[in-house]
Length: 279
Ligand code: C2E
Ligand code: CA
Ligand code: CA
Ligand code: CA
Image 1 (cartoon, rainbow, N blue to C red):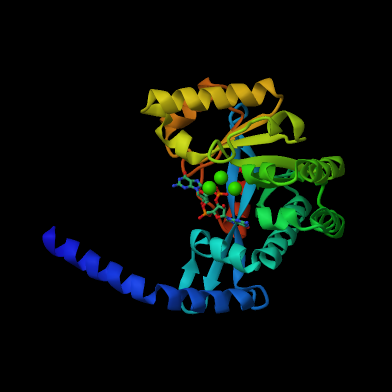
Image 2: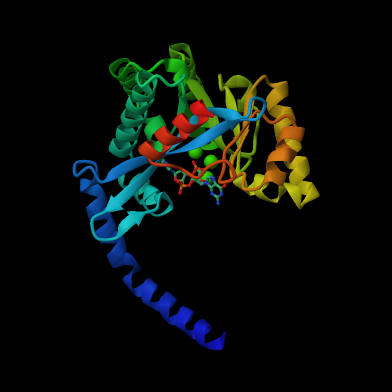
């Protein structure tokens, strides 16, 4: 154990020394990644607890780096946000996810809602709403089949401006979800003012909910809060049957997590849909 401890230390030192270099290399690669078509989307199923069936998917970006292989979004999204590259990347993700939803519909599957992650940086742009409107028209997606995942950080900007943007999007017919709910902004007053449809309870509350009575109480209160505001609620990071049954007992509407399925390539998700249809 001592030996591996020392190896870890050396590894860590080396990582520190190369951190800024690797950041620059990563940034240079990120600049060309959209043009070189190195991004792809994986889709993680979201399951309706009442009907025990797939109701939507969350689109999650993957970067196939030519030398490094798959780079996780945890590594490059922060860099993409700092450099503004999250704007073209995010637009690519929105278009791709909408096209995929239309393709599944055209292949004869029942309508599937696709949820797309949006950075606060994108949301703040003056033409954000126009961009979404154009993508909806251009791809022909049924607006109700598109869900935009926003974080609580949008509540920290200019409230009137945020409200106006959200209202235009809601009028367009797209669904709005608050991602990572419970981890961010402390005031909840925005919940009743903003025209949102869904709360996504963060994994950090869901994971311990069957072992820890405090997290259980938090999850219970989030579900109650959502329902009392007429919002739908989805729990993220559901990994066990016990967690699913707890959430079912709390009348949570939907779940997402490894227990039901990991994020899948579009082909694998098509197989998943086929298997569900033929079951
Ligand atoms: P997120 O939006 O909170 O997405 C959920 C993350 O949890 C995903 O990680 C997913 O693979 C992972 N996950 C889902 N179920 C489970 C589970 O049961 N157990 C565990 N341990 N993990 C689970 P991923 O794909 O690595 O994405 C990480 C983050 O990167 C996302 O967190 C999101 O904030 C960001 N991201 C991903 N795609 C995009 C995108 O297109 N645009 C933007 N702006 N951000 C994105
Ligand atoms: Ca998300
Ligand atoms: Ca989340
Ligand atoms: Ca997260």
